[in-house]
Image 1 (cartoon, rainbow, N blue to C red):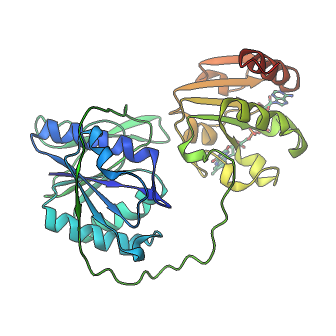
Image 2: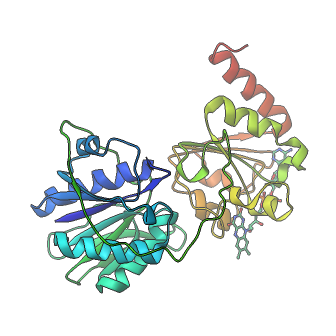
Image 3: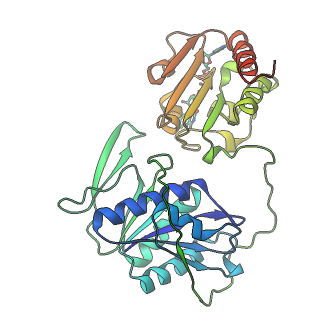
Length: 320
Ligand SMILES: Cc1cc2nc3c(=O)[nH]c(=O)nc-3n(C[C@H](O)[C@H](O)[C@H](O)COP(=O)(O)OP(=O)(O)OC[C@H]3O[C@@H](n4cnc5c(N)ncnc54)[C@H](O)[C@@H]3O)c2cc1C
């Protein structure tokens, strides 16, 4: 059986979990077995509806002790669920929570783990999982030989599949200990699209000269329902908060649209964004390395180009 970890935040299922469920269902079909899901903590959404992705059953451990992430405790609980359900492959999203839980579960179950898979495994002569390595410059095919196998799936790597059917919900009764991590306060960014889940991202670099010029980045992001991001140079200069910094040492993202304004395209920046489906670059230097990775490039001054793009989007949306 393939068990998919369904990630939730404040009771809402995360977008990446829909991908993980679709992946798990496809993998189960490939292996001639079934896919099931597991969710921890209080959930506000209709879990049965997740059956549309192809999972037959969802195990729910609804203890309030699991309402906030404590990765060690989650791994402990998931190990028990894996044991009782007889899961042979466990699928996570390779997001912040998945990155925290999957390695701990791997150690508990002595299960081989591939972190950041980008495709279904090749099961023709074993169990070989493909992932990006060297900041997306190469692929590695990793053969998993343990009895139980764990895969964390890079967000935006596969298409979400939806069909008909509801999943059966199995409430699992478990004694869950008190978490060792206590959440004392939560500072939520209101009204913004979370960067790690965004379909579209508008990002600015040092070419924007200073934080006072971010209005045009925010305006375009608002018009397109996009998240804002920046280069590390910008975050280091305190022009923007560090949680917006993307790249090798920041967040790795794979939105459908990555719009880079006044960013040179250093290898460390590209490492975090080169899996984006469509990259648009605005840079006044035609030799900027980012153009090599771009699907669309505009050689020009951001301060002239951006207002024109904003005006065109407003016109398209009937706002001007
Ligand atoms: C170990 C290590 C890890 C790193 N990790 C990261 C990381 O995770 N993420 C990251 O981003 N960087 C990272 N860096 C830094 C990286 O090497 C670059 O220094 C950084 O990305 C540069 O940021 P930038 O492109 O905004 O600035 P710059 O390199 O200064 O580039 C600014 C660009 O703006 C263009 N420009 C200037 N004026 C305009 C204008 N008016 N209109 C249009 N374009 C204009 C310029 O032509 C230039 O291409 C790392 C570096 C190291 C050594």
